[in-house]
Image 1 (cartoon, rainbow, N blue to C red):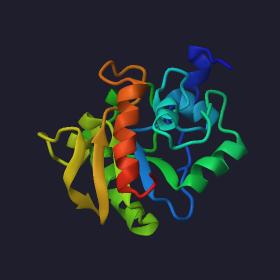
Image 2 (image 1 turned 180 degrees about the horizontal axis):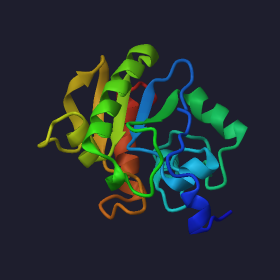
Image 3 (image 1 turned 90 degrees about the horizontal axis):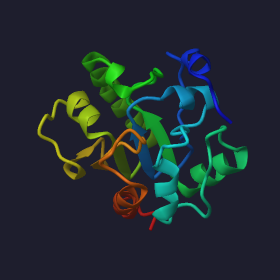
Length: 187
């Protein structure tokens, strides 16, 4: 399944529902939905995104989940049933994360904290160091496990799994995801 640029542009500003079920133990937090994600309704859906390959390589799923055409209901149940969830700092879909304002990221951090109080995951992994630094006003933050908790959850910050991020691979993300999964009691 593919989209033309004009087809994707029609999804600019749309939102994608959070993928969170009861008993979520590990919550992944993206920056915001990309246009492909908005078009398919599946988080991290762009074919070049490394999120699902890394999740599988980390040993968290029984099979590699493919979402470039949307997420199958059976995969959604499998993913949520494991205790993994996905949300975003900013709900609005854009072509690139750098289209977001500082104010949107800061408001997203506040919204995330409200959701964490309701969802109560054991661990939270924010995927995007730059967005984390801006949203939480911690300009010197580095990737990895953070020293404090976020609403009672162990906090991790990792690189963005987007294919546009040359600093990460599925293998490096898988190592990071394993660490967060262990903190969440999933491994």
